[in-house]
Image 1: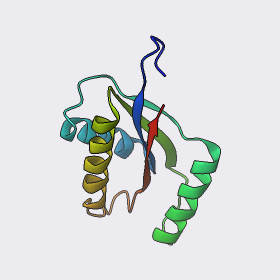
Image 2 (image 1 turned 30 degrees about the horizontal axis):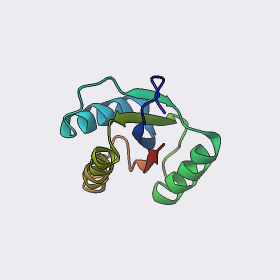
Image 3 (image 1 turned 90 degrees about the horizontal axis):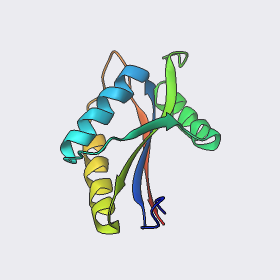
Image 4 (image 1 turned 180 degrees about the horizontal axis):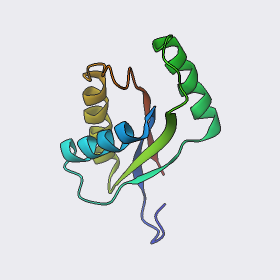
Amino acid sequence: MKQDGSPAFSLSIHFFANEDKIAKLSEEIASILNYQEPWVIAESERYITDDLREQWKCENQFKAISNEVSRQVTFNFPSAKLSQAATNTARDYLEDLKPDVSHSIIAWLTITDVD
């Protein structure tokens, strides 16, 4: 629920990657979603961080994770339909990403929350 009592529909994308890469990806996703509102970048919850760290280790066996961080980027939408469409678009975009040798493979997941 939003503070005004109306329902909130959000898309949260959790990243485990270099902080600059997370910021860049957030901007790119906002652009492809045509998202005009401010989005929120926050620390991911501990259990999600642990899951992403394990995924990272599997996909990046020879790269240290010391410079990698776990962040949650949240976009809010006025309807469940818009939120689900955004989730599908973001997921397609992320699945089509090519590995970046400077940052290696990025671990990520999407969660759609409907209140």
